Length: 275
Length: 293
Image (cartoon, rainbow over all chains, first blue to last red; front, top):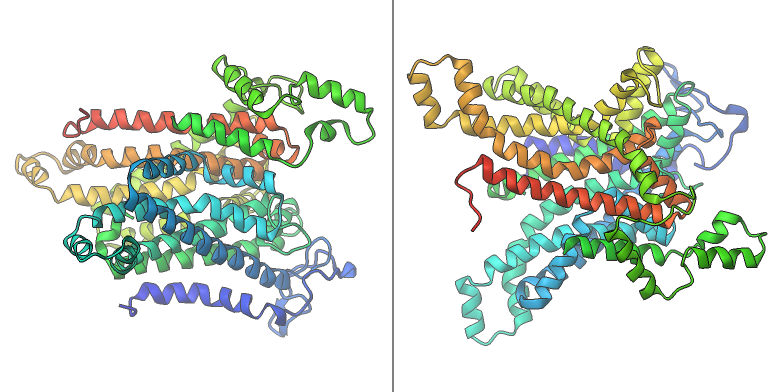
């Protein structure tokens, strides 16, 4: 299963990004150090080896490569934490909704519908407006807007499994509800959940960069890809490198995650194609 | 029902905002009596529940309050910015259909060939590339390097091309893949074999019989993606300084302009729900086997 070529492609795309994030502290320069003498210098990769600033500097003299490496950390941190929190929240609420049924189910599903009726970015923007922009708040933002996806799927799965024979048998044996849920229901929904989680991760990373681009993400001087792209846009006429490299990193990351998710879905269960 | 919940959510979220809008408007060195008077005028000193009740009443009569920054009716501000966004979205959809659907059909018909592979790979990349980076790239390529098109602003068709292409590319990719898989499903069906056996020309078989049936899920997905289109519009408008409601929403959030953000968000929710309803109706029309009791 793991020999599928898509996994190789995903690894190829994600490996450099992961390395950048892990070894960010080995970056050539401090990401916030202002080399005012070297503002807006172009990338200096030449045949004689890496120059002073491999990917150039931005308008304040900060090294693009170093900032990009630290930006990886921000994106991946936000993504990972958000997915975990949203996943747990969605899992619990979906399980409750599916298993209990009745008005609890109705209420939870109404909330899900309401949250889903907003364009994702607009919702994120609104919540940031309320909470203010910081790393912790951004994670909260994404957890709040993302849990609904999991809840829906989990609830559907629970509803489908609720009346299967082995669940009824377990009940007849006198198993408590929570035991039934954990031993019988949950293992069956792990596959679709993992696939969903990987796609959500990609979506969250992109949206985090979008928020950063709009000025609503992790606040400066933190080096997030989004804010680098915003700078890149402003200086596009004179310094194309500020925006291009973080953008490449972002695209590679998202592409890698999506390819991985696709491959995972195909490998785990081709019937999940509709997911 | 959903709309009610949406309005509640919007109202609550915005009222919890820590920043005081009056202070934002006037700055901190203002006479407190002026602040109080303004607050009373705008009704912000009444109890929360009363505010919500008034809010609902106003919505029903079409009054979405006054934009705290523009000092005009919020509904009016939104209405003025709306056509720009609609224009952008329509153009994006246009690209999606012009480029995406034929690409998908073509890929399906030449299944397994080089073109098929190329289309699939390009559409995968297109779906994963973040919109704003794509916009920056396009800007870089077409405006800065080639000088064919302007970098930002609006007004002429030339100004429309880049933003709409940026916004639409995701849809192009999505439609290409979707059309391809739908066509593949349909192309193998028996009724097409019959049509061919009848002696109809191949292209008639493909378009008249094949495509029409592939259209159903395509239309559904297109409708569902309209919500995503709105989200993408926010970003695209920011990149290209396009004066639509996306740009408005971001500005309004930054200046804590409650009423305006409320207005935009409500509008989006409404649009989304309406479109979903329309899709449902269209679905029953396109596919006679689906019926609602």
